Length: 289
Image 1 (spheres, rainbow, N blue to C red):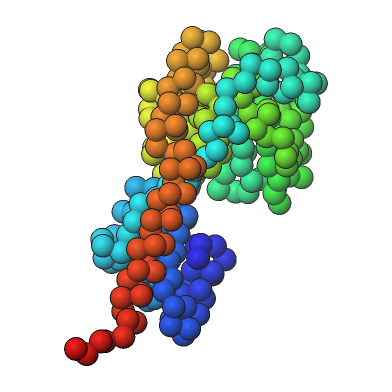
Image 2 (spheres, rainbow, N blue to C red; image 1 turned 180 degrees about the vertical axis):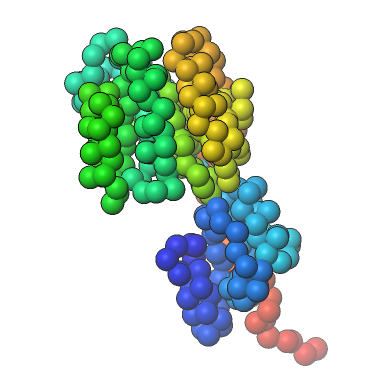
């Protein structure tokens, strides 16, 4: 089961009624009332935590440590990889100027991703770098409002709301940087994809983001609501191609070591075999000699 839309609650109840072992992957960065958490997680043999932040939240809610297994999300490092040709594909796809500095945002257009909060920083940055372009990948209920806001701020020329793109792996390596202003994040798959493609990330140090972005080594982190610091961090990257390159190379290595999809698939296989083995032992008949 996965922690989405009540599946964690109803899935656990269904598994208990059916008498079969259940494993839950908790993906959400959100504290829970301890009483509710103890009831909800009781049917599960194991709760998989995507990040250290989620591990801490589960422990604080009273889930026994032996039932918490850390396995983060993974990324296909062969699909998302550095690609020199991606720059031209990105420029052609969105009619960007040849000298553009291109920053990406990959996130649903919803409140907790805080696009509007990030957009408030752009007028000053655009004055310094008129060639700055921001490409926002993703869809969501805030699209109309964000378009109106961009018009009001005079940013319609500098920001593209690109919607869903099936060719993301071919475009992401062409970015100069990725910005992730989210207020909450279980881990951040988009961060893994960008890092795997050799793109440095500027993000808020919330939830599982510090598991992916090592501040000063693979990207830059700022405090959750530190808008000025986010602007300074992005300014630092825009001004220094050599820093962007160094962070991007390190980001790729970090992902290959810790988040390669094949390694994490193997971790899940091992966990499932363990849970099924425990069940087999529990139901094995007693043989009298």
